[in-house]
Image 1 (cartoon, rainbow, N blue to C red):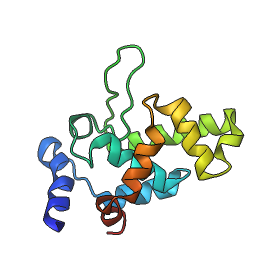
Image 2 (image 1 turned 90 degrees about the horizontal axis):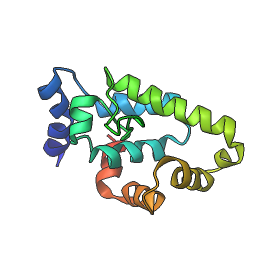
Image 3 (image 1 turned 90 degrees about the vertical axis):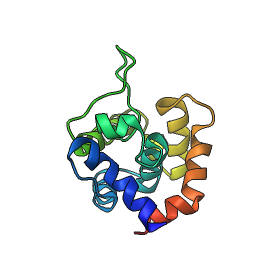
Length: 139
């Protein structure tokens, strides 16, 4: 199983020449984001564990789309993608302070302001309970 996770981590390198280290990526999320475990689950869900085209080509870790074109947002690097979710959280915290009081209220915020697919929070919770996710975040 280690080799599968290693292969997943190396895919962006093979396609773009950039290296991707999940441990470093997760440290950056820990450093900059509220509810980092939830944000890590979002990244895993939105990128299909870092294998999606949007991730490999666009450095898009969170499924962000350009509202004007409907196309996936492109980032020069993974760090820009993390900064994007950091800014999203900052704006929402300023607008909706009560939605940041605990993880359940944050899940509710994600359901109503981040992804309108029902039930997004349930999908995130399922990712967080999965063995694959637990192995990945405990590397």
